Length: 110
Image (tube, rainbow, N blue to C red; front, side):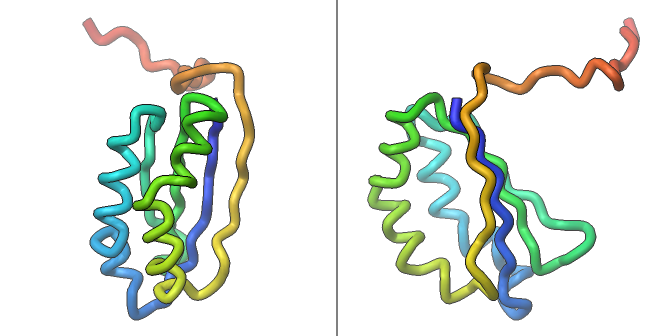
């Protein structure tokens, strides 16, 4: 899978509304057949920073994502809400879902 983490520094005046601003883009991306997940989180250290964790099945799914009309629309509309160009880590990993963090295994409660 293609695993991507991106940091978006949002202009302070738009920070509280960011989930609403990206709602259509998020919904459309999550509906893509090759999207495994597309999840936003807000930084605890910087309320104007959002972190996007996303994954796509393979190269074809990643290519389909950046060629989709909703992605092109996001390219046109989202930058005006940003304080800087987003930063990204993009890697291929040989798995298709989250693994468990064994070092913090939760004992069976049953």
